[in-house]
Image 1 (cartoon, one colour):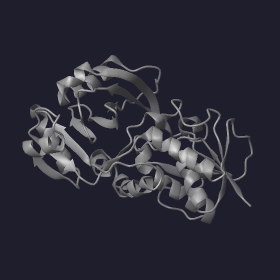
Image 2: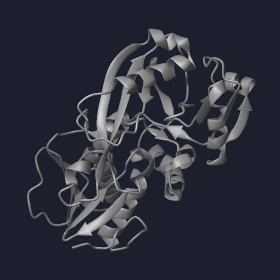
Image 3: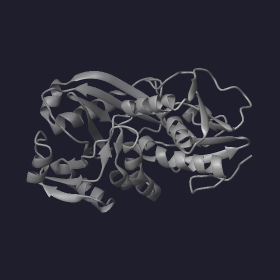
Length: 325
C-alpha cells in the first residue's frame, strides 16, 4: 500500500494528514521539533474563522474557502460559533464605513446592539456584527488533530524526513524556501493576557488607522491580542510600537484591560506568496503545500483537500500550480 509522508506538523501538515487519512490513505508525519508547540507559527495564531471579515482586504477565494472551514473544524475540534463584532472609535468611523463597503454577511448595530452583545465594551455607538463567523483555540485544535491522527495509527517521526522519500508532501512553511523561491515571511506579533475584570465572549475587531487589531477570548479570563502584519523577516522580538498598539487597543475596548497580566509574547513569520494566497505545487516527486499567510486555520482545510485530490487522484484544483520542474 502507498504510504504518504507529510513533512511538518503545523496546521498545514496536520490538516493534510487528516484529510488523507479520512480518505483511506496510509500516512506518516515527520517533524524534528516533535508535536505541536511554541516552535510552530500556527501555535501563535488567533484562531478566527472569519471569512467575511477577512474579505475586507483579501481575495475572493479567502471568502469562499473560508466559509467551508467552519464545518471542517467543527468536525475535528471545539468551535465557538458566536460571530465577530467589529467596532471603531468615534474618530475612526470612516474606517468602519469603508470596512462595511468591502465586506458582506453582517448586520449594522447601534449602541444598544453593541451593549447587548458585549456589555463590557465601553463607548462604541456603532458596530458591524458578523453573526455566522466563529473561532477556535488554535493550540487545542492542533493537539486534537495530532491526537486524532495517533488514534488512527499514524506514525509521527521526531526527526528530519530522509532524502528521496516517495509520495512526500512538504508542509514546512518558510523552511521550504530552498524550493519555493517566491515564498516570503511576514512578521506577526501577538500577546496573551489575563484580565479577570473583563468578560468578552466573541472576537472583537477594533479598526485602527494603520492596522485592524483584534482580541479573541480563550476562556478563564484569558485573551489573545493580535496581530500585526509587518513586511519583515526578523522574528527575534516584538517592537515597542506593536506592543503599544496592541495594549492600547485592548485599553480602548475596556480600561480594565490596563490591569491585565501579560502571560505570553509571541513573534513568528507567516509564510506567504506574492498574492498572499496558498499554493499546492508538485516539484519532481514532492508535493509542496504552503503560503497560508494570515489565513492558516481559515484556508488549511481547503489546502488539505487540494493536496489530497492531487495526491490520490491527480486532480488539480485552483490552488494547484503547474509542475515547475
